[in-house]
Amino acid sequence: MEEYVLFVFSLLTLNVIAPPPSNKMQYRTDYEYDQKTNAFFKFHIDEASLLRAKTICQLEGAELLVPKSKQDFSMAHGLFKRYPDLGDRVLIGNDGQKHESAEEDPLMRLEPSPPDLRLERFGPVVYDVLTRQGKVERTYYYRQLPYICKVEARDAVYDGQCDVYASDYKYSESAGSCYKVPPFALTWNEAEAECRGQGAHLIILNSATEYEAVAKFLKTAPRIQTAVVDYYYLAGFRADRLTRNFRTIFNQSLPEAGFATWQEGEPNNYDDSEYCGALFRNNGRYNDVDCAANFAFICEKEAQLKS
Image (cartoon, rainbow, N blue to C red; front, side, top):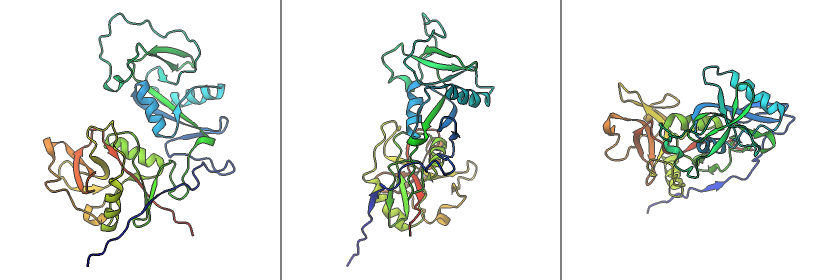
């Protein structure tokens, strides 16, 4: 007689607020606290469109910075000075006020709009930038720039049981871990950085038990529309380009980590471009994918059990 084990995922609702002000103020590992504004800031050096900047800030539980005080400007200026090689403007949110245009609207645009701007269809769209001199100016939508995210300390989410700075993690009692599929597709490097920022890491399967639990989780996991395909989820292992040996982010081989079952026919290193690991949505088995392509991904954090 076959035995069946029921793996239960429950949505955590405990302690999803930031630590109290009496404690050391902390949010994600990549955000910096400013006591005068009682808020956290992050300077993104990667250039982005207005749409992508807003999306990434939202993914991180923050908003694109809209300077509302002298201290906001001072904090932004201080972050900007750390990167003297980035140019003279950084993207910020629109404050609803009128500003002089930073440049004339060109009669002919010789450079194409970046791909992720195709959703911004109501152009020419203008947005605000902050200069190194602390002045707010207005520019046009085809420009990609560094940007700053901000989250008020009172709005900084913290999940106490999973010990992550994010919401919507699901806990698996059988696996002893919490899992989340963030709502935006990223490259492998970006996905690992995002999970780390939350206090987690890209998922790693450590046993057959965890595999069964995650395979069940994947059956209801969200499909991410921004992914190049929606039937893979990035995982925490990748291969050396010379040896093609796959190792986890904790420098273990897959057998050492506890699970090493690939989908039939994988890894196949299609077009000599697949060096990063992923899970198949339909069964949770391993696949190799292009590290530079945007895929959905799963963040994992081992649960902090309360006595």
